[in-house]
Length: 396
Image (tube, rainbow, N blue to C red; front, side):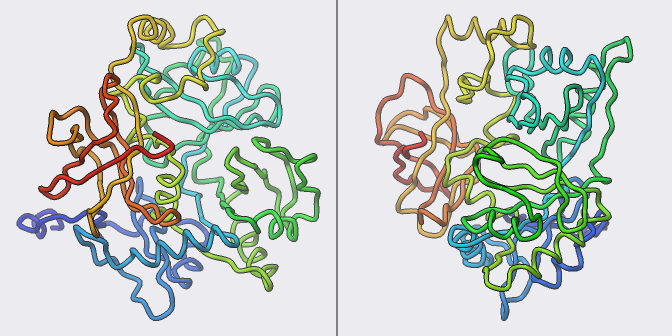
């Protein structure tokens, strides 16, 4: 019925369709809805896309230009920058991998280094051609016990990868904990202060360095607390405790401004930071060197999937490179991905992979791949039938 109803309608960017929803919800879905959450669907999960402030209807009004959520999303970004933002990230896929053969399995499967005990790394699995297949955040809970966290929409895709690479001797066990484990993200300068109030433990740099995890009691709930490389704090807990932790954070924030934020604010912050994303920049169309992952690849390991292809690519040179561009003159439209990039008034030399408005730096950003031979800074991007000036950012 939904497909028939929309047959002759022009779909707009960010449009969310209502059929079969809500399907999968987290334990704080109703609390977020009461605080203005406007949800989108990601792999069946209801995920907040943005939060409508008081007096604004909690509803998407999509547009090819800046939509009704443009300003609220901007305020979420600015709120995170000045205080603390909280997001429900329970929809992320979560796999617990354990057993005596787990280290050998991961070192063969992944091109990046294996984390040491109680540490966290971002890791990538490649294809045989050295192209980016999968992205994981890997948390090493114990010597032979790892958590692999990845995008919600990659749950089945990555579970398939892991199952196909299980050792035949039964030395590795995989548990899909996506639904049984929930998570919150805290970002901003006041995140550590707020978290300390409900943990009653030492979260100093000395005791809790960047890219590490700790088992802690959060108020009354058991949890794993993670401090990411971007100074984001994450709390992973059995799903039945999520509501308790969320309400405890609110109760302790009497003198701290809390901003609830959604996926669109997170994407804006990503563009501001020039971070490539799995599913747009990091995909099977491009190899890991073209994607700028050189510093993460552990070439000292002799047998990870894709190693020979990357070494051959190093020898022959790269054809493409990932860049970040600031677009100007484009008023209220932004790049979305797959737009052509050309030298000024000249040949097309690449395409965008994603884009949007970076609210903290107040500029329109596009990410994409161009030919490595191009050194001309005077580039242009085609948006809605018109060419707009684009220059490389300090991330490109």
